[in-house]
Amino acid sequence: SQQGEEDPQALSIQEGENATMNCSYKTSINNLQWYRQNSGRGLVHLILIRSNEREKHSGRLRVTLDTSKKSSSLLITASRAADTASYFCATADSNAGGTSYGKLTFGQGTILTVHP
Amino acid sequence: NAGVTQTPKFQVLKTGQSMTLQCAQDMNHEYMSWYRQDPGMGLRLIHYSVGAGITDQGEVPNGYNVSRSTTEDFPLRLLSAAPSQTSVYFCASSRGVGGEAFFGQGTRLTVV
Image (cartoon, rainbow over all chains, first blue to last red; front, side, top):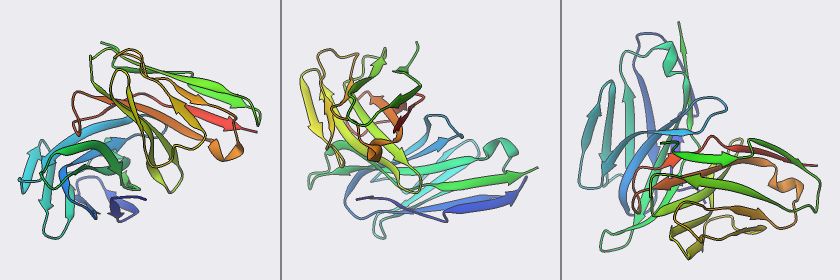
């Protein structure tokens, strides 16, 4: 079964606007990651946030993590047409001791379309 | 570095045929995995390996077999192809468990 549930399933915005995607998950995690997939291509890693972190930035990307709500959000600021892609969250499960099992479980993804 | 290389990129099989999807990485990563991606289903884990000689099942292992004789290679075998195995298959590797995953470009498989 899918660990991550992403919302919205599709998002359409204009260039320059911000895009926010949300991810919820069900079990304890070691970390949560966001990936991007351009049409017909493999996934590319964007950012990783550990379970003891609350916020992380990378360029125009901002990721938050709320482990009490088992949710994360990805914000892309000042979006560009080149940001058009599918975005996936993935969780690395952990055991009670916090060690990762290693398996990444992916959500269904959010399709982002940025119009020029 | 080439990263993660998958072959072939496209394949058409007849029901009942067997084949092997190849995956190789040149980053000396311990962890490798195979996913399938279907419309509306995201990526689902088929099998994974935490090192040479060690493999385990993921979420959807039935109909697939894997082995890991070297650190670099992690082939996925379809034993007797079925139309339900029509999908895009991705191989990925990472340095450690739960770390950043590097993906291949995918194999688009059609079973008729």
